[in-house]
Length: 106
Length: 121
Image (cartoon, rainbow over all chains, first blue to last red; front, side):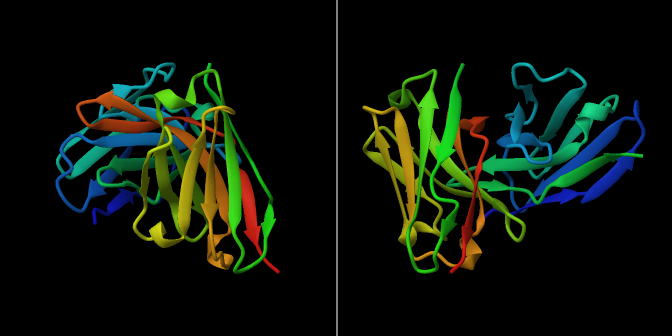
């Protein structure tokens, strides 16, 4: 089975900072990688699908890239409303999620 | 706009069956795949399974022996049954639309708000 890991587990950054979260797959998953944002007490929200495609309504400060086993999501200028936990997810035989990265404001 | 709403008991006794329903509005349930996903403190986000129309189901191998999913097209709802539950099944359960973007790209683009289910006597 494919396993997903994320780093860091948590981070603190200032408003306006550029923030990057990494997701690594245990084997080559090509471009089949999605990113979700989850705010406390809420359901996850799809941000990016297929590595780099922005879901409708997602601010352009979010971007994704990668291929194979290594992927990133970047927030170009961190905003207070971006405080959340971010999950990567791969969909193969069955979907699997990463453990999440919690983003806080410094 | 597509909206999903989970419903069902918030408390289930050990060894009994957990039953949840997801009401779908804004779109015909027959047109898409639908998934159940749960989230617990211990295991993070875990996909349980998906259903399409009334004939196609796929389940997480780790839960397959205990899971049944079905669709009621007349009510535009789909459901989850998880039998022989234990404390390990305590989690927030989400229903979600399982969207095919083409070229084998799939993602969960619409989620319900989630419902907490506690397994306890």
